[in-house]
Image (cartoon, rainbow, N blue to C red; front, side, top):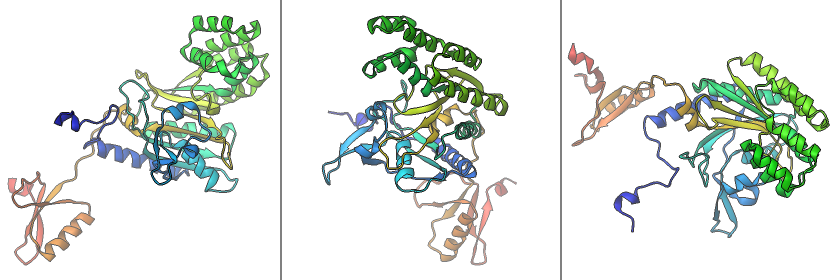
Length: 395
């Protein structure tokens, strides 16, 4: 039986947001949405729950494992609580907003995860993001990358490191090495951990050819400064499918170096995040000294949709951005104006006018302690009301 204290405990990874952090989150949310609006991204709002077959259409197993399931009591069908809003936004583009024109959408809302992304992390991030549909070129990849970096800038995040990869190179290497799909998850884990001894054991256990093993060993080592890209072109020269993705990465690196010289760039051609979901460029933003990513994204195409279009986008947790931002002077609390608890029509009109002007007017409830006030509303001696600043008493 739970103790009274335990009755008030929240699940692990779930927390209340109290003042003034809630106010700071709301300000940042508004700032980011205003930024996206200025870039032409339109806001959409998605439902918290959907039927599972639509919620998980075209996504990988990782998102399935992160999704809470429940039964619809109206019809017995299985539903899921959204763990990521990106598939929902892709569904909106495919099924509700018709046409071939490029479409830019943004979103913000709470999502729920079965497990936190990192030790001690949240299971209910306040997710925001932006998606661009209908264009498959590098120019749209660059646009969403720049919008993500601009989001970090306006949020006050400094010392940003950007990691770039390309799932096309990874897939081409696995295909060229003849790695069968059933054992690819094991190999992807080895590549993500950069575990050279485990790779050697894998190559031996699965009788991978000498040529295939050479490609995989090269891929494992192809990470670091963007200068690794010319080396990658040499070592993967026998793999024509890698030429296009490498050219895309070189172009993006050149553009980012020119436009965002303060952002440190890192290239990892063995990056495996979202392997079952992404189909091109993948990227993640980090902050120096922080082990977990603060924003991520990439190119993808949702399967199973009526109009699956080329798509690229990014997402982040506003709570994480707020924690990663530079210490700022908090916004000043509104000056409280104290009004008497008098049922007077003229007083009500005066209070309404003050509130419309932006004042915070609080009623002094009978028998209750009143908050500190910067001003007090009192009779003006002529049948009306006026506001007297408390500083006036000190003079």
